[in-house]
Length: 262
Image 1 (cartoon, rainbow, N blue to C red):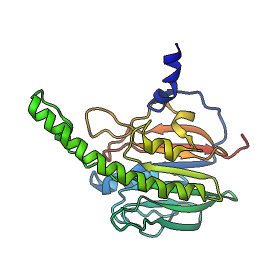
Image 2 (cartoon, rainbow, N blue to C red; image 1 turned 30 degrees about the vertical axis):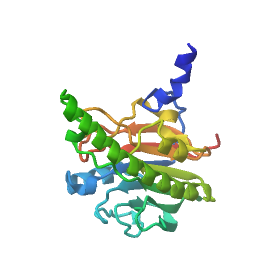
Image 3 (cartoon, one colour; image 1 turned 90 degrees about the vertical axis):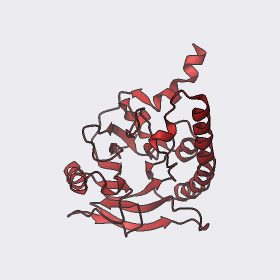
């Protein structure tokens, strides 16, 4: 029984059946890795517009592919894009001092219904695995070499993640406003990245998710690497991984927040 209790929270980060309170929706957010429009730019644009979200948070935007009538957009910043119907107060790139470290994200402070929130768009270094690299075939020598190749790729990427997480934590900890942190972390739940980036924040899926949270579907086995976290002053009222559309190798993640007093 005690062993089962110890695993309740880790399991809930993958599969959850919570019963969130019904409250008025005040902020609708979409986070989506658009794969640079590779699966169809028009389909992606049409889908995003149809959702009528307050804030759209994109990774692998493809250097500014998406702009929509009625939305303001942060200045072009490589693979990141945040679009909003509301007033942008401040924006900046989370810029590493190390030239060998890739930009891990951008932040934008947005005023919504008279309150300011900090939105942080995250895309940590990908591991760049090809499907064949993680497909074992039963040949001992071949499989052993594949495992070694995977480990060689994991270690330097984990080190980059550690440095990127430090930069993102500074943007969270120094925020004068409630934070909504979203994006493609290229990390599974219960990982170093998950624990450090979620510290002091709430996992929207754990709060209001129903069913599976897996969002990356390009491999045969499902993986959860896309997240939305928020400050505790925000109440999550719904969480959805939209598997009705296959317009990227990721599914869109949609969260609705209430700003009513908790």
